[in-house]
Every structure is written in structure tokens, then in C-alpha cells.
Image (cartoon, rainbow, N blue to C red; front, side, top):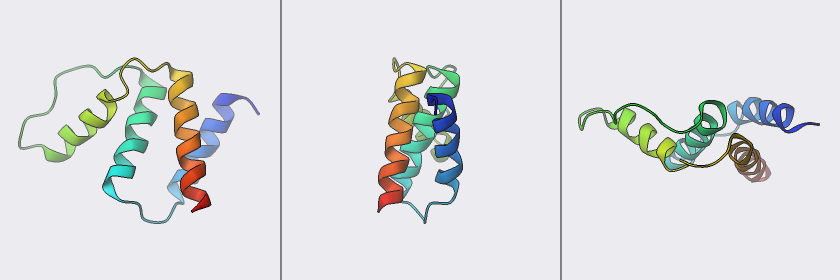
Length: 84
């Protein structure tokens, strides 16, 4: 299976994972955005948009990763979470 297909499969499996802590969800979000969009752009949300700022930071933490690297990291994270 090619990387893109494996990544798409992992995104579907991630939706079925049991409840995860916020830090894990943010890591998944950051890797997903890096894989699908590339480096974060735009301004960081304001100090009262806690959720938006956390998502921005999670995505920015992966700045410089290639799409392929982010996909592979996402797949590995989902595989690890699914294994328990």
C-alpha cells in the first residue's frame, strides 16, 4: 500500500480510537495539518482563543517536516495508539 493510502486509512482509524487526552489529539492534529497543508501560515490566534492557539502551536511544532515525514509520523502514532 502506498504512503498516501496508508495515511488515509490511519485517519479513518484515528476517528475510531477510544478517548484520547488533549495532548495526543493535538499531536494528531498537528501532524495531519503538516501532512495535508504544509507549514503553518497566518497569525497565531489571540490569547482568548485557547483552542485555536493550542492547535496553531501543535501544527507549528512540525514546521519543516515534509508531507511524507508527517504522514509517516501520523501513521506510527495511530498504530501505537491502536495497539494500546
